[in-house]
Structures are given as C-alpha cells and as structure tokens.
Image 1 (cartoon, rainbow, N blue to C red):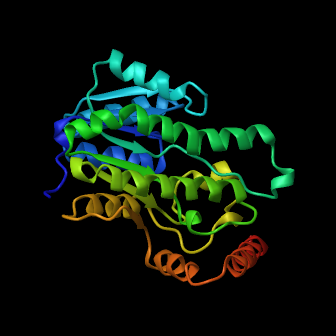
Image 2 (cartoon, rainbow, N blue to C red; image 1 turned 45 degrees about the vertical axis):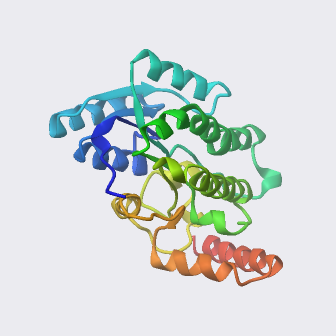
Length: 268
C-alpha cells in the first residue's frame, strides 16, 4: 500500500481552530489536500484558512459549528453536501476533558463531554464512512488518548470516552481493511495545545509534554505505512505505560493510576 495521496479529495477536520486539529490542517494542506475545517470559532478558522490558501494554494472551506449538539453530525453532513465537498479523509479531533471528582462535576458539562467525545464522533464516522470506503485510499483518524488505556480517577468520564474511541476505531479498522481505507486511533499523551486550558488545570497532566507537530507527524507516518496498525500511541514513555497496564489486575491498575493522578495534583 502506497502513502496516502491527500490530493484526491477533501480532508474534513474537526476541532481545527487550534492544537492538533490546526496542525493536521497545516500538514495535510502541505500535502496538497483541499480542506474543510470545523470548529466553533469562526474568526480563527477564517484566519487559518487564509494562511493555508496563501501558502499552499489549496481550497479551504470553513464551517463554524458547535459539535456537541445532538444534531451536529447531520448538520455538518448537510453543509458539506451543500458545498459540494467530496470527503476523502476525516479527522475526528474535536473533544474535551473534565477534571475532578465525578460527584462534584457539572452534569451539563458531562453530557456535553460524552456527546462530543463519543456520540458526535460515532455519528460523523457513520455519516462519512460510505464516502471514505468508496474512495478507498483516504483515511479516518479518530483522536483517542493515552487515558484510554486505563481508568483515570478524577478524569473518569474522559478516560471512559477515550476507551470507547479506541475500541470503536480498532473495530472499524478491521471492518474496512478490504476497502483500502486507512483507519487509525491516535492516542496522544500530554500535548502543548489548549487542551489543559479547557480542562482548567495542568494538574491532570502525567508525563512530559509533546508538541502537536510530534503527534501529527506520528499519525501521518503511521498512515503511510504499508501495513498500518489500528492504533498508535505517541511518546515512548506513553507506549511503555500502556504496555505495562496490560500486565496489572484491574484493581491494581486503577489504584496505581489514582496514586499517579494524586501525585500530579499535589505537584500542581
């Protein structure tokens, strides 16, 4: 299987106004992809689109849309159809985390977290996967997290949503193998983006920060491999931690993770 040729259609990227989404947009534009960029902040989308058009000569559509709403996936599909965009690659990057004891969490924010991280990701994958399979030479990237590999006390909902994304995406990888579509669950660790601004604290961070460039470079390099795996973890230390987590009992795993999180919060 040859490297992905992103010039064959439109790359649709959610959460594209900053962080990993913005970096995916930059890197795919550099590889000749026309883009559809989705996020809530229209001004940042428009500024990024103008830069990418000027630097790479690609077509860039901006779609300001909040994706946590129940009908968000249908609304986005309707808009890309209205614009006549033939989606070849989908990067489901939009998502956020909450931090703190579950019993003290805002119920509305939890609902939005589950809706965005899980329900919208699934709905968008379903909305576009017929087109992706039809092309057969593009990619579906669902952004998971190293939190997917163990329960995380004080981030109970977030880690559970990302465990879902990991399992769901790996299953899609198997279902679509014969089509030629590259499907990848990307699991970053702590990354220098606006993620922790949304969380409200860097106390939730475990391990060293990576850059968005490092994470996206790993994703694109993995997708270009002849026999790409269904999932990849960014960062050697994160890969070691995930491997070790499989050796522990569930009781010991969650107890150890709880202690790690408590230590991180004490440092903060």
